[in-house]
Length: 195
Image (cartoon, rainbow, N blue to C red; front, side):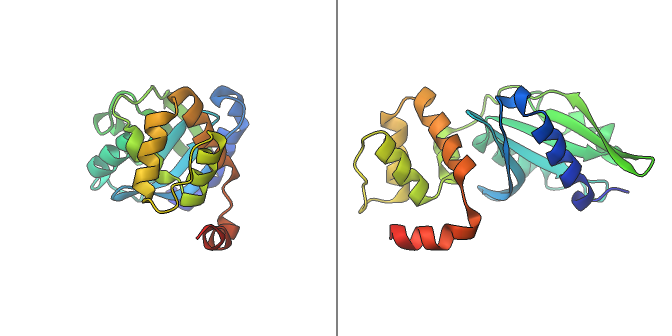
């Protein structure tokens, strides 16, 4: 039986080894808050965000409906990674635009198989996607676009201004670039400095 901790390293290796398929580079962020759910991982590419949900053999589908709804609001594309116990019925539990990767243990090694490639998510909501960014990241995007800093305004106000004034073909690559550069080790100092 494979557990989440057994699946993550080979899955992330597979995604990184295939970075060319995703625009040349990828970064994996783990345990990202996604509304009322938490994404097991988010894969950042040069212009798209991929939500990744892992259902190991030890997991059930009990929370999946709510997770699918949240992932679909936040990410451009979504992937579910399932152990062999879920492989036969996973298509019944996720929309047709979700990618599916199955995982099994073969001769002591983890084997991954792309059962279905991901398609564009028709339900993604730009205003929800923006909430993934931290305030200092939003400030840098404002600066890149020669906009005021809106220091006295709420984070939500800043997000709305960016969505309103910066075209998506410029904004989303900038959002992804901020996520590529995100440093979890220095976030306390960065936020303190920003305030």
